[in-house]
Length: 111
Image (cartoon, rainbow, N blue to C red):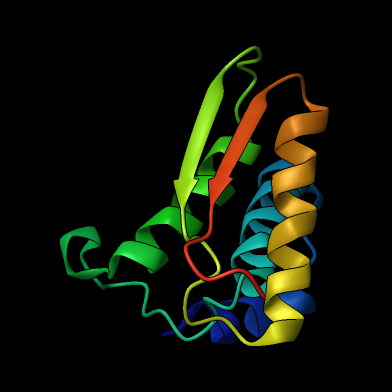
């Protein structure tokens, strides 16, 4: 099952016993979708991800972290993304910054 398929399955799922966990899962899935990773299969090993995919997963993972005052360096995180996904990626990077972190982005081919 892909990230996008799981998000669709969880859309109508409602159980108060697991509501907080479900909200967290939905936030993570939505973040993965927003950086263009909805096609990833849930059984895919992280060692098979491309460099750009791994960086975007890392961004999503760090968004949920309570750590602050961290310096993040991302090397071409928008590589291979559709222009609409680049805007969403930028929003996630801004969220990391707004959480009290330093975010450095290296783009070798400015757009």
